[in-house]
Image (cartoon, rainbow, N blue to C red; front, side, top):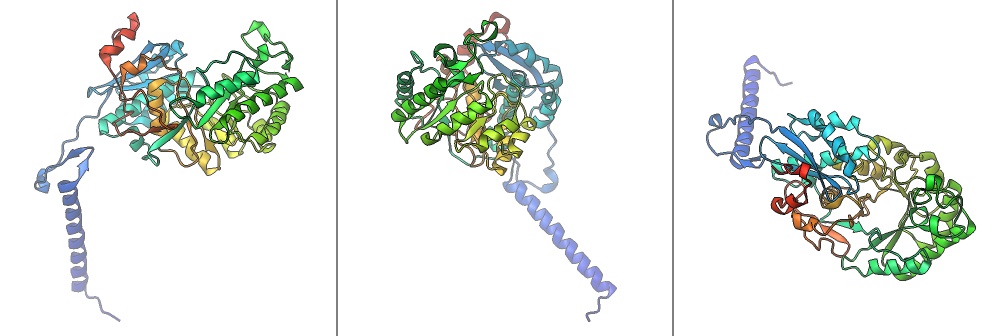
Length: 455
């Protein structure tokens, strides 16, 4: 047995302390000489002379909202002269007062503490359209955080796992002259021929089209709907109605072949029994997904049990989620495996981090991601690219915003005109969302009461 005397114990203790002290000083010195803290190199001088004085935190000084081309655009200004931008869907001109409601909650906050800011306002959002204001603000906060650190937003969300992001086309903007199978075939051909080389196409059909109003005997109900609304939202399909949908799908598949994936958008929704029948007869066509078969636009409820029954009845992937706000409202769909593909919209769900969290949780349950985004505009597209770059391998593609006036490309810098190539967008490395306004060009699209938006 080794005898440890008091002197030897002191010697060992002193030795250990000396080693730890030397190692700590050495490590600290390495950081001082070669480290890069928050993008600023520290001078390689004596350690005792290198105490940095903490800078005052960056503060939010204003929250503004302007309507540009029908689209609410958010600008958050800061004490350091950095501005962050976000955008809501381009058919939401009425959102301006909802955005400005949150101003007093954010003034004086550090915008780089994104989650702290969001905790103050997230609880006061809601399903479409109210979550849109919260989501656009969240985009702007990440834009500032990225610019302040000199990093792309995707770096702050965990870093990218893909260098390019797949997008899909919605068929919107490729107008059909009718609702016959040949009309759908021609529309599919037009999208197939586009220079962007889309590898996935989603087509509106059923109650997400003019069929309910224009196809005779399409369903058992009033084609005009209650109160003479523009189109029927829901009803029980006739056999003729079901066969019309199948015939249009068959016509599109003949055009697209097996090289381009075809998804269908069927919302606002069908009856559960019709959804099951329709999904089963569509199984031979190897569709990417059937979207919003039970619920759809502006229907703020989840119906997880009904979706579960539908999903288990068919091999065709089911899809929903564009109308849902916050992760909590996806929980039941995900935990019950009630859906095969979910499609939150970054401009509605609560923002970029919210979308990333949902993607991660869905991946744990074997559920895929195909985010919605048709009306999100160029800033919304920039947000989608950044967050999609970070999603796990359950990511399929996001819905590219095609409903954009051409002049947007003249007033937004950082996003090339021909941004989609071979159905993908290359992930850029510019700070924040990676886009900025050409202020001089953009000012002419401001309304009179928004003239100070860029001041």
